Image (tube, rainbow, N blue to C red; front, side, top):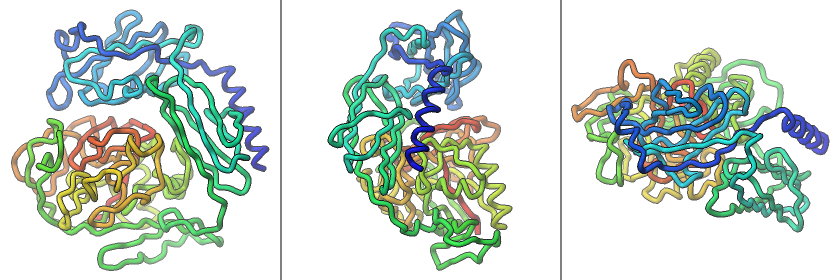
Length: 463
């Protein structure tokens, strides 16, 4: 059966390659002598000057997705894209080519800077005479496994498969009969080759953790009573899947760039006192793909796996999911407010003053750029924070309910964010971003319709 499925995948990939036109980045660099961002400025939501990315492409560019301050400016074969500082990626949509996600750090630009101008140049399929490539080496056990990269088989020998690919993101699968397959993504940079070490584990009948458990017998769609103790509850959903949640007691804390938060950005300031007057429950784990599948009947994620966090879900998608989940369970789930999220990430009234959620040593608690292997990981596979909550630093960004706005230094009670803003808050950093994005005070945002393979969410339930 596995061999048949593998053949179908390879056939589909071969057919797709005939019809799919691919877009490639020729170069992305800072134009230090170009003063467009200063002489023709545009403000972001924090009233700061944007960066300008001049996209050069011979063809019809239809849209740019991401943290874009609209409208786009068209100048012949050049499109000016205004983006806030600290932006790290964009998605390029054209008429005749496949959509392309451009992650700036692949081209040695970690994030955009205010008042700076950048030039991003693309090549279409007919123009791709010279492009940057890099070597990917995958070492795998057992040596009889099959390796696919971008749905194409890579021939290996003695447990080593090697291939040369264009710089950027690529998918891989390592599979073998009798073993659990391993799949994910890897980012190739022009500066150095990439190496992966994959060790497959033998298939077992082990029961999954409660957040992603699979049914062993046919079950009726009847909601079972909530299992609870003083600090934790487990709420059954359907098909044997439950949601584990942790109580966060009401309290007062200082929100923003407190002294332990190293090198904070301006939008983390000023610090201000926040009081949350009600206890609430927050997800012990990020919402998993198994839970999303049970509720929505689909799985939009790029990296597939029941225990992995769901990603490629927009803020709008989350609202639809929550509406359906509430009908199934009879509960009132929602996204956390930004203040609720940060208070829980800091450990609530049990906080020990860490920079990240649960530790000042990020690798203890988070999957991020330096240790993730360029992919998401099973929820709860790093250490929990003081409240017993996992992955509030790293793995995937998490949507909050609030619109994004600037802080004030006045005290607030149960804040719910800015009014009439088009950007929604995201928190926590992710598997592909650097350590600074994982501190508990770090803030970012996206448009409500944005979907990325590093963006998911967790749930909150009010008492």
